[in-house]
Length: 336
Ligand SMILES: [Zn+2]
Image 1 (tube, helix red, strand yellow):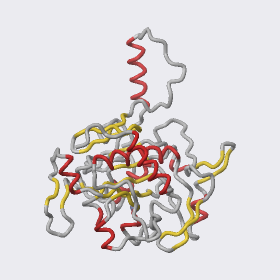
Image 2 (cartoon, protein in one colour):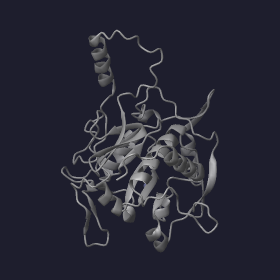
Image 3 (spheres, helix red, strand yellow):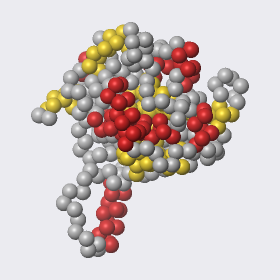
Image 4 (tube, protein in one colour):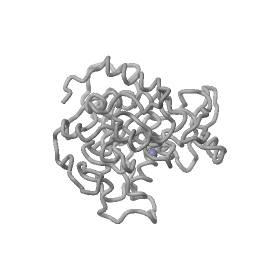
């Protein structure tokens, strides 16, 4: 069920009024996201990332642990998993079929988890908004991902990183995953449908949700999502030409801050992507050998040949440089 943030805001306002605080209110209270924290959860421990985070336990959060549908006010999907079905693997197990436990479901050891996790996998959700993404992943497909990053830069964590989410096949055991809200890129086929998600106004290019999506559940009131680059990006992935609009600056900002923390908590996740012989981040799936040897930040398309996300518009080099800079400026005080 969708939980509106407004009753919570109203309660907060009523509480403030009840306190009759003598302090004058600031003229500009800033964006209305004060009801979110900035901490992610790893093995029951909290780590600040410096960007807004809504946990699965927060009002309006998305609970990946739930074995029931989240949007019970919507018609039951035909493909919905049976009630009581888990959408994830508790803890971490080896992927060789032996089911050897690498991290126990109740482990509180970040160091133990750090020996199993060496990948951070980036996806786009092809839904355009995180609320819709969770509906598809959790209620329809019976899948999971640790994080969803909405167009306004708010990060949703759906479960503890100790758990193994089902988002990237052979990478699941070793990885943390994020679904970035975006309608995605297209080859020539599908371009017209993609273009309907964008419009130009006085401020430039912006996302326009289709009417059936409403406000998409985006938490920042009246948020206007504008691609960081004001034009359509063209490039190749898996050898095929694709077109796509960029992510929002708010999404890049949160993703940089999240990545900088993950790369420090998990020393085997290098702040770098898979590179080809020429030194550029490769646009193709990795060979099995390269995949086994790699530890770092990668796209879903680096894992699977049948995937193209996070797409041709994902701006790897500025992103990776920003992650490294953030790590230099904000070293974790309590690295495990
Ligand atoms: Zn993906």
